[in-house]
Length: 324
Image (cartoon, rainbow, N blue to C red):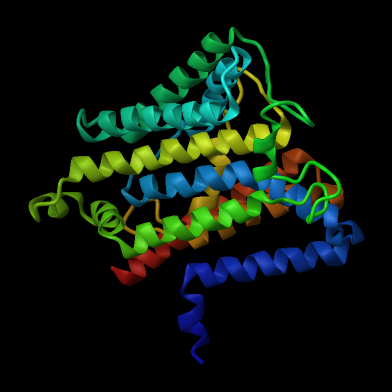
């Protein structure tokens, strides 16, 4: 077995890193191996992982989407406002997904048709979505149904909230939905024409255009995916935390993008892995949950996470130099 060949694959490296991190935390504290830890990791990973799945497609094109965090909260605030006016929960969910898709479409058009730099375009929509959520909700915190309230059923998609069922209370059922979405989108990215075109755009956009592929169409679709999954992240967020607050969401996108990069998707485009993205997100989440157990304060968490991110980007640069 050629170990050098195996560990040149960044996915293998991040899997090993996740295992090592879990082992270290379990040795340092007994709290880490408790069932509540798994629940907390899952609850914290849901919304970041859904955002990360969507933005993987954008980063694979060589772009970036800074708006996913605020779009997630904006979709929740707009959907929640309709909920307060009497809309049934399934309609609220459709509205949230539609809001995410519209923002993704706007980002895609700005980047592909108007040729704005992705950083500037999505920075603008980040501000717009944050402001729009506050305007529509009138700066009020929106509370979503809980317990036996009408519409509270949607929370069961992400977490068991009642006793007496097949699964124990607080069991993270959203992990199942996340796994299904990850498998489907991994197939889309790696086994379909759509995914191949998106990766081709990231590898060489001009060559892809000259080969007759509608670059603008597929680049726009990548941003639509990102917007829809941002809205799904918003749904996961309110299912777990029950409320959506205006002027929040900033910073969510950094966790998602960090997970994508750590998982092996190249910021230069042309390389993408949904499986790697999920592993990268769980590395970030395990660190976030595990550090407080051993007494590491939040500012040290940010410091260490930043070092990990820079190291992941540096490894990506080395891999691209080695291949090119």
